[in-house]
Length: 197
Image (cartoon, rainbow, N blue to C red):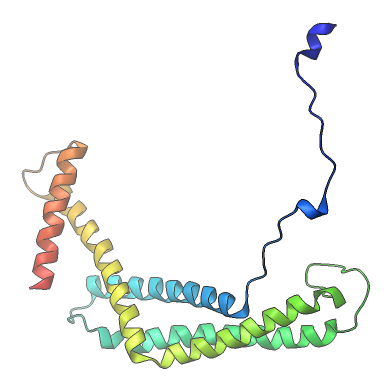
């Protein structure tokens, strides 16, 4: 039976609370900054889709200012959501203070959760204020619209290039990957040169 003992037994060390590295809790400012970054990305994606659709279906020339109301409304919507969360957390905090016992479900906050609920409340409140401020900053919104336009143009131009390669007369039925990349780069450069002129 000795052939079963080919593995060396590992001796496990006992659990030690002191050996655990606790990560510092994010500050309210860090949490709000992260929330703003996520909000910017969401608004930029919404604008990118609107700009791409406008480029395809609208006969009008592109005008960044025409997207200002949409950008502002998107930030206002997010600020409203954050305010609603803040109102809900205010109620949760009032119910949490002095409440002992074990939680019955994920949203059943008790005395031990008070600091966490208070932190979330401050983050929601400050995020709502910051998002409302951003909704009114025209230069900030125009910068975000420009980023969205570049994203949309990248997406639309890649689609146009692919379409041109597939359906242009005399195009090879199948390009090898290297030739296809060269063709795509050339067409993309031509399209970008035309839009910048």
